[in-house]
Length: 142
Image 1: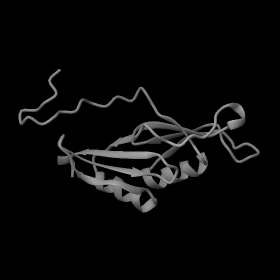
Image 2: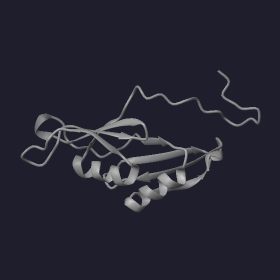
Image 3: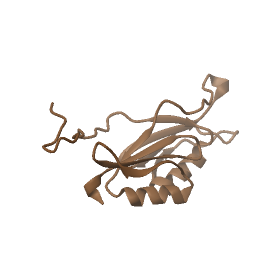
């Protein structure tokens, strides 16, 4: 498959949503509330909290995709580990809207939105739970 355009820039393939992230955070309900404010998440399902205030499952919809999250349960072999080695990527049309909302909610700017070599606008944020988020939008979308 040819991955370049007539002008020689890279052409990205369409996204597919058959694989979804399931992350463990320290405070799943607090994270879900943050994701509602920062990324417009909609709550699809939440397992009620246990006696320690933890939940084993939260299902959110963000930008037409699912994100699932839970609290750690170290007593059941599921401890919390620092987030590393992955980024949650949001492909959006209006990156300025999405970016400004996330920053206003409390996301930390890691890489400001800028025009990248592949021809899209891109930036990275870290949420208060340590998860790295990236946003990408076609440069001609704004």
